Length: 91
Image (cartoon, rainbow, N blue to C red; front, side, top):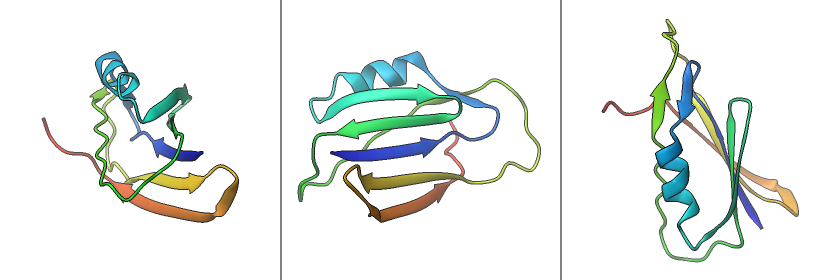
């Protein structure tokens, strides 16, 4: 099982529409939202490129916004962790 762990930007939440669109994808087994982190569980990865779009809504204005992390790892072997950072994309 592969986990994509998306830390949300400070002051943002994932929209319910975004969650619904993700849950309808056959490659996604489960989605959990805990505090400011979204966990996307995939049964497995293959050689095909996949794109996951999370729509975020700003609920609190934050100055000097810092990048948030995206971690991808195998649930059973978390040592192969891959980390990326994002600042978001405008509407």
